[in-house]
Each structure stands twice: as C-alpha cells, then as structure tokens.
Length: 69
Image 1 (tube, rainbow, N blue to C red):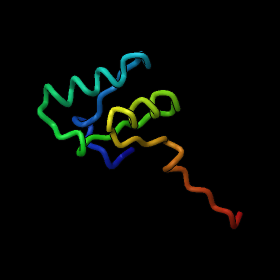
Image 2 (cartoon, one colour):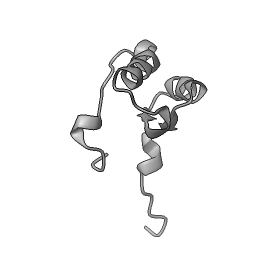
Image 3 (cartoon, rainbow, N blue to C red):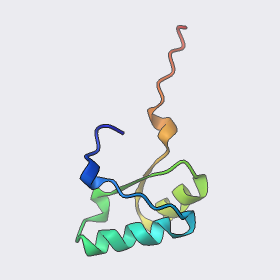
Image 4 (cartoon, rainbow, N blue to C red):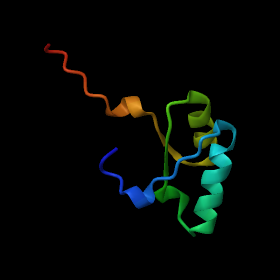
C-alpha cells in the first residue's frame, strides 16, 4: 500500500492480538477510530475489526483485474 506513510504502518504478527493491539495503539496515540483502518488478509481478523468499529480492508480490494486480456 504505497499510499500509506511508513510511520503510519504497524505490524502485529499474532492474529489473536491484532485487534487488541490496534485498539491499544488508537488509545495510546489518541487517534479517532474513524481515522484508522485495519488491512488484513485473514477474514476472521477482518470480522473482529468490523465488530470493534474499525474500517477494514482486504488486500484483494486493491488487485486490478484486466478483463480485456
């Protein structure tokens, strides 16, 4: 996602704690949850993000498919 600045990217390796870590970061950095997004390829994590009130994005949303080929 080249349009996201490096300083705004956080990686959490353990899928069990991604939502907890993101919500903790939002609190610590005093961010508005509406300004944050979760990008993940694991559907369970995306569902948990939606339930937590996060904007969620699956990387496949950014795959361009040229149907003319």
